[in-house]
Image (tube, rainbow, N blue to C red; front, side, top):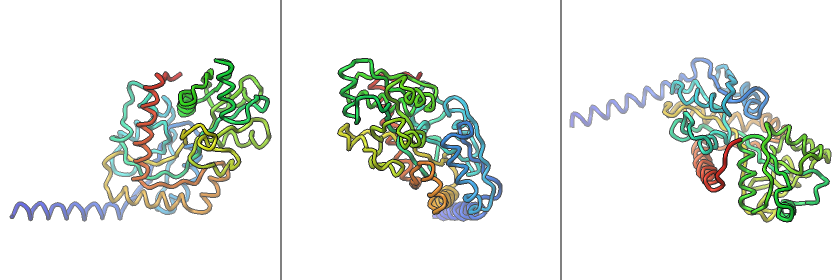
Length: 319
């Protein structure tokens, strides 16, 4: 009896201490690591959020760009950081794709992180040169089957490669998958007519679509994107459920105090849902998407399973 009372007393004491810590949190600036160079999607999203999140938390948000090794460098920094809520990561699907395609990654996307919230997303899409005789995804698949190996489907970056590989596998289209060093160079070659098509991010493609310089064939999302409402989804195009969205989510190292995690989740979501933040996201063709930690974890689990299965099935090698 005395032992049970002692354990109950310690549990209550720890709970009180955790609550007090959360009440005082944050007591100093919070660092958010962006595992890419300045100017990319993760960086832009975090710099939009940071000023208002800082106001809500009452502390400075320091955006720390740590690019390298396809986002692995910055991601590992946060995985190994103190578990106190003062070091966070803003990541994207590379968090789960990297462990699927590389044999050695110094972190585990589930075991080493505590998902806080998703704040925005944008689907990948496939575009072609306007002169390509294909008005839809089904037509470009037919073209690839009629001209084996001659229709180029380019990609820049690992998430885009995943969609290109999945599209080719699901449709049995005999595309020539060509890697580029980024979305920009691939789009430039489509515009110039050097190649027929590419996988691209929606924000990068919208200006070219609106100018009539590329043709949008389909978006890899469950519903049409607000940034391009006239472009059908892969499902609507009759290709099947192919989902490839760049989500932007904030994570902490696994094991931070539960009360701190809950406070971060609440304030990050409240910030992302501010009308001015939503408007700024929409202005750069991002979907103002918010998911709590539990929903975010479900996305991570599903993406890890999906992309790991694809890598094995298609025997994908990263270029």
